[in-house]
Length: 342
Image (cartoon, rainbow, N blue to C red; front, side, top):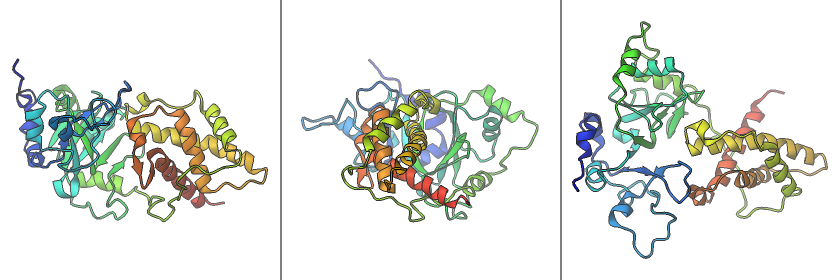
């Protein structure tokens, strides 16, 4: 049975000059579901491993292995991807703005329609498409000339609008659906009488980059944690009561368009609020809880609440992924609390 060439199905994508400009970079793969859980969560896969075939020594869960390295070890160029996997549901690329010369404006499904329309008619768009949900948009634009004018934004992987309605992907995975934005949606955007909110890509970048705050990690507020869970007074009770307080009150992955990273960080933030209440009550007994203690308690509560996924087996900064995320959140919240005037 012959396979249809995807370049004939998605000419707007494969023939686009800007896409062709990054086609030779060996940072392409597809985004797929890892493991056996049918939770809709997708991640970039080790496409080189898939193309070369699994050997007897493979021990990864499920039929696919996640891309653990952003290099030819796991990834390929676009032409090889099309040749070896012509029926792929998407094409994922690890964008590196500083070398590729592009960034992606990722417009979320919950972005108000008038704001989304305004972004769709911003000058300078090189390629545009509908996102995986079918309700958001991806816009490929040139790297702004004022990229280095905002020191706190330099080195950020992405910069998010304050409401989470859209974000700029700078050093990040972008999953291209290759599906053009319907002409009627573009027509509605262009029909607006008022000038676009952002006259240039530089204006959009400046608007978001100016709001970047110094992170807890950058300000030296990194929380160190022990290699193993410490013996924390009343720890079991605090975790149990935090979980019970959160039951029925947490958001779901659907609230974040199945973006599991955003969803999990939201859960950590919610759990932290209830955890603080429990810690405060037990502190009345004369127990002192360090930032490391609170981080471990938050992590243990999150493990009980969140559905496990392959990413949780990964490490960040030498500790389990969720523990590192918990440490980052606790550091950030404590830094904010310290800045609040008495």
